[in-house]
Image (tube, rainbow, N blue to C red; front, side, top):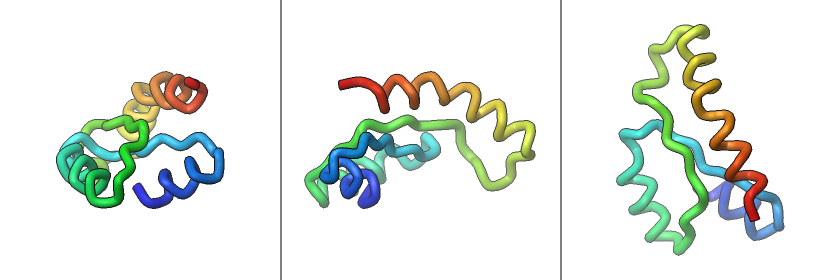
Length: 72
């Protein structure tokens, strides 16, 4: 979240990516720092995924990520 905020302040488009279970935490953190970046939530959990499973998650998210990075 802080990285996204820093990038955006410097005029560099950023999208915050996290697994869906952290959506509430992201909202609370955004409230605390006064910044709510564009975000994409992906399937949870991440840490136990195989490379093939991670490729599927990335493939499912990439179009939305690109759209959010290029919106404006």
